[in-house]
Length: 325
Image (cartoon, rainbow, N blue to C red; front, side, top):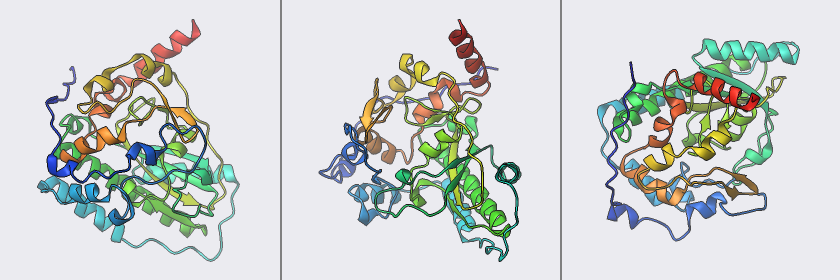
């Protein structure tokens, strides 16, 4: 059966009260768009509001009326946050790193993960307001969203699903951290972006979750962009997994689906330099007002052909055949 497409209203005028809260500094500048030299990332959103330039806009987002499904998702997530984790055992269990890596993957999958990956933590991923963590490894976790619910983008029905999956991967990260601690190693979980000390997309790319898409999110060879991330930092001895490239970059260069679907026109047609790296990057200043007014968006990742159920695997095979000829 053919999957329906989101019903998107492209008529949009930004809310005047919200636009009055836009700061003098550009979010793109904070993100480092146009910078050819390297620097660590600076948080632009989802931090303590009074500590960021766009904090008044973030407060506006948090002050809007919410449907019951969103409130329930927020309550469930808070319960997960409030659930205590295990203490670190006094004596570490000894195993070879490759054995631990397999055990970690199995433990994460048993605890609800749909994607699991491991890579060495790069201190350069840490937001510049935080000290880089001491833990040498990061375990990335991905949780798949219900695509039928995401077809309600933009709006709170899809937003509730996003929050539910952030809660799911947070619970996986916390219960996995407890398991690692019970083996005698330090582990610290990180859930939704509101509690992050580092950017999560780079380590997810490094550990094999996929490639960066034109819409600024990861495209996975199985789930497309229809998933959310969490992470665990740990000193458990592990083995890094390889990145996974299967032709997304060239595909996105020739595809305009998300670009045309984006109501505020925030998706760029080409790559830009961001803190020393030329890559895909969404225009924050165009994106965030629309995102705020609709209490979340996800149009771009939902219309992405890779996200449609049953499509990603066929695209991977098609691109592989194209590269082999």
